[in-house]
Image 1 (spheres, helix red, strand yellow):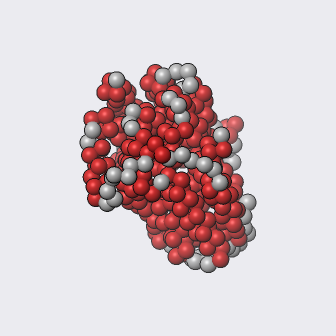
Image 2 (tube, rainbow, N blue to C red):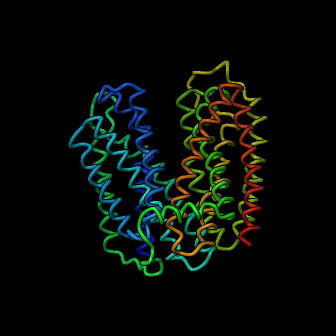
Image 3 (cartoon, rainbow, N blue to C red):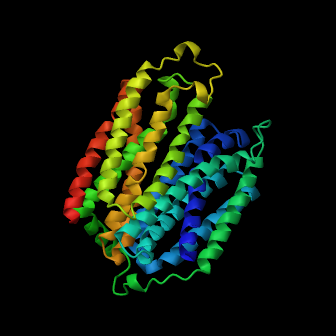
Length: 407
């Protein structure tokens, strides 16, 4: 139980740090006088380091050791967080997100691989994965409340928001101490005969070419494409298509991480009793039904005449609530498929496989956001959201193929 709590805390720390990038982009414009274009580079510092380091670290993770890798990650972000208020500058902010991205690669690969060591069977593995991902979304939600507590609304140039990092350094430091003092038996995955270096990378690439893994990475890619498309463009859809006021559009989009956290939490219990395949197929069918129900309602919701007025949640159309509710049903898919592929592989391959999960998830998220942007520009919000039915259909096929190959 102590080890599981440690893994939960590790994940929450990085949920907050990773999802603070939008808030920080806003704050550095006022505090450091940087342009929007310059501030937007913080996303690249975070995402590129995650993808690159995930690919590299997955090759060495069994040699480094899961516990040692997590301690390195927590130590690095603790120092980076302390540096932020001590050296207030834009370059330290870039350094922070590079450190967070690189460290998250260590954390996610190590945490995913460790789950195989502490769970007894595939159902328990899938259940724990859902609980873990639900707490990640809780961390995402807490980000907004934590940073807003230190923001000075009356002085945009204030650096008071940097005091948030003292709190984050404290949480990361606590996670470090807890992990340091928690036993983790890694004897099952020690592979002393493996050479360090290119051979390990070649092994990971060879793993990626296995039919089961190929189908999995395609499934993970398509799922994240769908999820990111929904999350990233729901505020725009609310504002431009449903004609909600900007503030309300953003507020109602925040329901998605809440429903996602709830869906994964519930999924953690359900997967103890129900096979992952049937839960996911049912979830996708319900998600598609909700989408087909919400879009015609959205078309009828015409608030154009009152756009910009002080509309509240009670005034929003039903469609504005139905779209975020989709998150409740698609939520169990990502952790469940991750668990399914990891459970089907030997323990020593969990590290490399976790690296592939992170890399292809990052690629799927980027592709989903770009595709939705193109469809929004070329057509309209309704067409863009109808497009989400395509990845849902693909997932139904891919999950079925995956299950048959897995046997």
